Length: 393
Picture 1: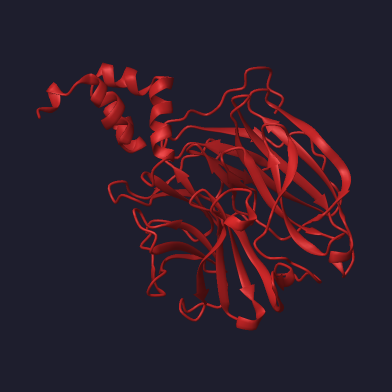
Picture 2: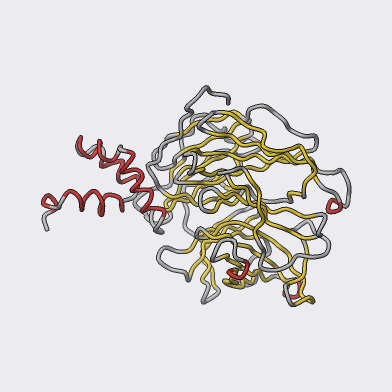
């Protein structure tokens, strides 16, 4: 069929929403009607809805160790690797590089050593800087963030958890003093939600793992029960809840994650190595000390249901020729046979791991300076959220 004779509803509802965000930005230059259509909130929402429901238009966001943030299109070689032009440039050669907080609806949030936060859309190039706000830092504190979307109040939010740790060799016997703050893009203010109170320890962990856009997760060490737990913060109502683990982590902690016993097999000692998100599901990497050098990858198929945890694969570090920590990032497009994995060490690399063959190959990512952090982001046309009231940042 001649493209010019396509019914408008087919073009608007079936064809254009399936295209990558960067291609749509080019189409805005074709004619005025395309520019008007692609810029409407209705089309942007339709395009986002399709993108979130598919494994297309995925971007790797890579944060350099000494400055610079890069975007690499995971599913198409049409778009070259690009260094992102952020509003306030992160200088190369600085001691501390940017830290990736996370992505939501095609927007990425990072923290910088300036100190400030930057939210940006890697597809459109738009970005906004947020000053950290009132400094409530506790002495001897550590800070972690989370980023997501409160769909009830139509508000993007950043969560900041600041914890003061006890100065003691046996860290696992003492609680931490913690406070929780939330930044609302609608109000432009940081709000103190709770604390400072004595709370479970936030261990050496990643920034918040986001599920369903509004549920942000961190792992904590419960001093009272002597085990790890996953805490979930709901951006809709600013309330905490716990997510069940597939195994019980009992006994004393360790610096690499906490040692426990595996469910019904009390003789198996387990270390919780990594906690994050894989294909919109919570995931865990655990190491069984009876099988040193082998990681088990768990995926929670149905959120909140303990019985839905599934052991996806056991990964031997000998198979991938590594003796270091790894983090799963994504599946290959249209396949569940290959996993994209980040090697986390002084020479971080990304590689593909074949689940069936248990073989690996380096991902061919060029034009990127040495990086230490990586996250997955969907290509979208979503704009940077605006403050509706006075700017308290």
